[in-house]
Length: 171
Image (cartoon, rainbow, N blue to C red; front, side):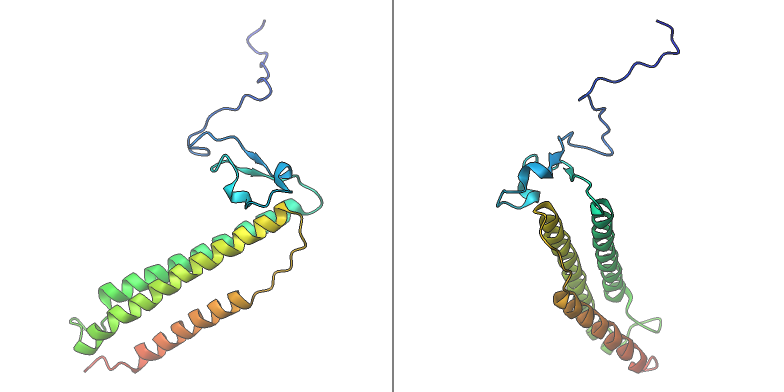
């Protein structure tokens, strides 16, 4: 056989890539689990990729759901960085005043808790949406929990901005 002919890979033989699939798990076919009462994330193999049948706009919807989770993750990371920045260096002059030292830790903890809340809310929304996709259930994104989290985060940011502006740097 000439060397220029490429042999097709046998069907069912997957190449192993540790960056994409570090545990080398088989994918989970979601269509086989539509009648199960267990959550789709709890089906074996646990680390396997979830494979959905692409009907109509399913692929677009799954990508939108992943982008939404990544947006929650990004917000969570921003709040965690702000939390650490406030705890480590919350002062306007070379040396922090007593008031600034007293405000730094509680304000940092508030932002850290908001970061964890955003992460939990984002993952819960993602998991709930994937579960509804897997059961082919009608999905309406109602967001009172999301609105509450955003209201609390916005209030904390606005309150901390007012606090920063009202703190006298000369005191």
